[in-house]
Length: 314
Image (cartoon, rainbow, N blue to C red; front, top):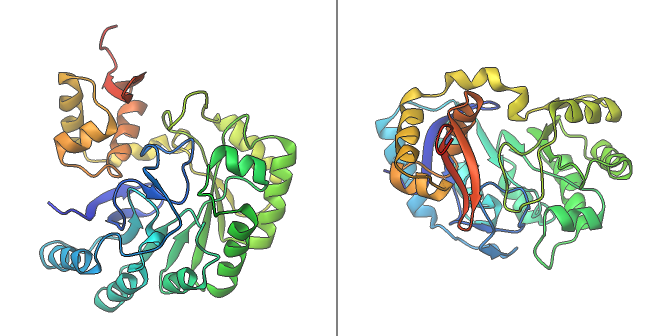
């Protein structure tokens, strides 16, 4: 059992992906209202070696010695990977050891105004930053950033990275009805997208309840309307509601383990991770499948969002 690696897990966007977790739960520069991992426990922009480089490289060496190569290696997990100062050297290690395996980094993009962060990502093949707002008010409502972070430096970092990075950039936009789907915000976002010029703009929304109550998912029709309203190339919808057909490829043994776990008692995401030994970033892939097939339901209780069999107490 690895502490800092998870998977490989099937990803709708990336294929069979080996995940690398660079920070403990949940250290991030944002505290987004929609985050499915939970509330940020340390809201910071301070970069340091939160997880030692030697530990991650040691686990990677063991994985490569005992498993076939994954289709892609992805830096993601509990928090913001660019907060770890070892990110660049670990990417360099991967490119030296496994040059044929692409490297992707899922990041909120908030540290890209730092030249050292941009430099650390230059050897990656694919970077997937996010941007949910183009005005300061909406940014603070949705993303609830660390005190030292302002939206203009955030956007400026994305623009600067586009100029320096030779790989692909897929920019994810999380749509929350009532927050960032009104005309003024959509117009402002479009103007920023045209300046950043990512290879793809990926519309997403909630798969299940996020950190806070009172927010809902955008419907597929709402997402399609936004795509049509923007009328710019490269916009695609990646929400689960648009991609349900792909969920049947996920491993049935893991789904069964999750079902057996929650049939004993309702569980939070952290409970499922603790009991099954799965990484918290791995589990939502299988929950998507179980929700799509009507096997589970959710209920918000005092300790958070609980998962239970669909027929329980019904």
